[in-house]
Image (cartoon, rainbow, N blue to C red; front, top):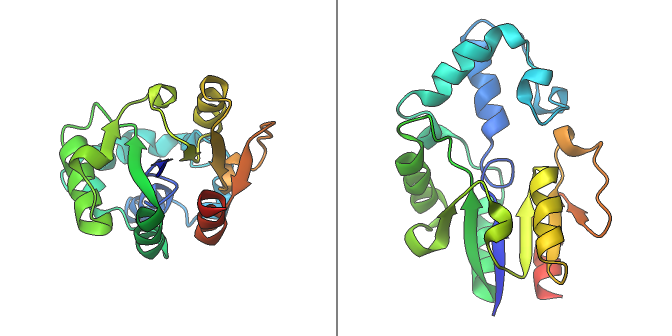
Length: 182
């Protein structure tokens, strides 16, 4: 059985959407996900909101409340029928509730946790057959360490300027299912 390594934020969890909702509650400008065109969200969101948004991310319940992308639940269930799915995610280590809330989020939304979850910023250390992430540098590094695996950059407005030789760019669960089963 193939092992699929899935990032969480930007792949199945809408971190950007949750952040933009917080920005609006803080009195910031109305923005959409299409307006976020750099990995560093503050390359697109006014830097004057950085401290306030960081404080929001650190609040109890913020991580637990990030919405699931439409279609993610059903797609992950389908993936789990044909592959071992492991969520590989970077924790916001300075947010005291992040780790626990992320695991609870995965249990509630995707019926995953425990052995299905690895917290690390060094994602290239995790072995799998398919690696899916929205951060180009993570995908490039994993691909360098696992040249025989399938590296997938999950398409988002903030990574569209990235070109990674040998890496697939996918933006739909149907495409990913085809790659995993094909």
